[in-house]
Image (cartoon, one colour):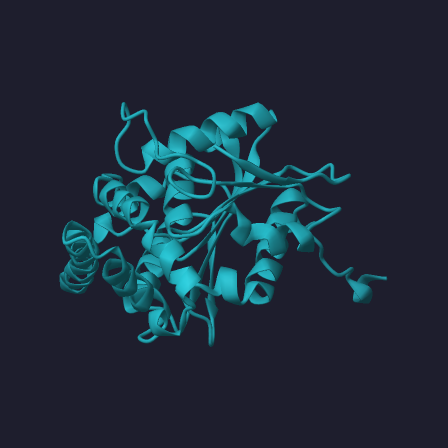
Length: 279
């Protein structure tokens, strides 16, 4: 696992940031710059991305495969961390919080890719789950036919909007096509998860869940369900932002990350105005 790290003079608990599928630790470079001098930001390449190989230890299942490798790195830091995750990284962040809540001082997720619980929900949830299963099938089907580019076109257009792929330069298309195996692994690990919304009710750390109002319906639905269940969560509904806002509009996301982790690090003191009439 590779660490992208910016050293600062910060004495606050560090931030650990986990990226989305088809991305890398580099997606958090602006967050590192924005928080320089206030928080150390540790951005990890998740298995199969950046310079990190695919996970070789399969003693775990589901998101725990990636979560276990991140937990080992957090333990090396020697303290609880402010855990941040986007999409697949958000799903892994939630898994880490469930596995080792003692290591998570606060939790911030942007549209976590945690779709499995929808399969056992209401009619709308089951419909949305079938939608994401269909997307997974399109990706894996194209890969099986030797057309990784077509598979990644389905994937990226779903999350970014129709036509996104067509507007990419050839070099970017080739790079994304090379990540299809990792994307398929992310889908498989996510579908193998078994935690329930009730399990989230036991997580007491302060949490912020963000979703863009231009994002796919399933991303908004999952974010709202998780925010409603976490006992100490706030939800931020962000107008005019989509699923990839942490990458393409980081200025609207990073400021909210900072606000949340700063408040978790140094909570606002209780205050009441003096009774002037009694003076």
